[in-house]
Length: 113
Length: 114
Image 1 (tube, rainbow over the protein chains, first blue to last red):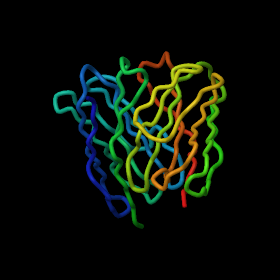
Image 2: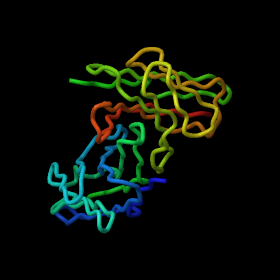
Image 3: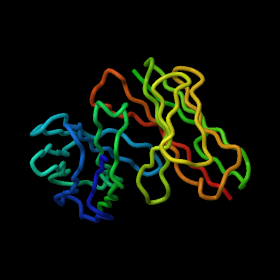
Image 4: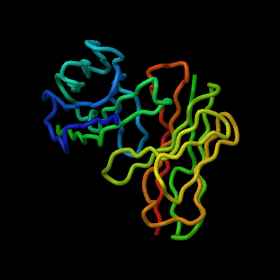
């Protein structure tokens, strides 16, 4: 079945540091790939997505590129801020799967001033 | 624009008591609906999903149940809560014609079973 594996956390960085959170997936066909973010005490919200190989999703300075050859969708940001502290979830969905998504376990990011 | 509501926001219940959590979506019709649970420090576990009124699929065996009495209303219930039911419950929806199945989450309900 489908699965998503994320880099284990927690990750602690200083402000303005470079961020990478690794994500790899296993799925048949051509899934869509997502990063969702969850701020403390809130629900998840979509951060970015990519729907086909070599697509790059980007939002709020975050980027991730759909790499089919390595089945990866790593999240990157060049300079993190304290306000980026949150839990980040990598996820995939396949249109043939009745609208269901498969989520990774989440990676907690803490950015210190 | 679309919005999703969940209530209550927090709930403390004794073991063995019943549960009813409600989720409603506004600004869209015929959405897919989902209930997830997030245990403390853990990832998301899909509990139920629904593609239409009265159509419920269960992902994991448990003492919870779900119902969809109206197009944009999704209810999570239990007759007798267990300690292990504690967690953060998230409702989400997606658009059927969106083949990427992007999910839109509600604010969540924090349930503590004592």
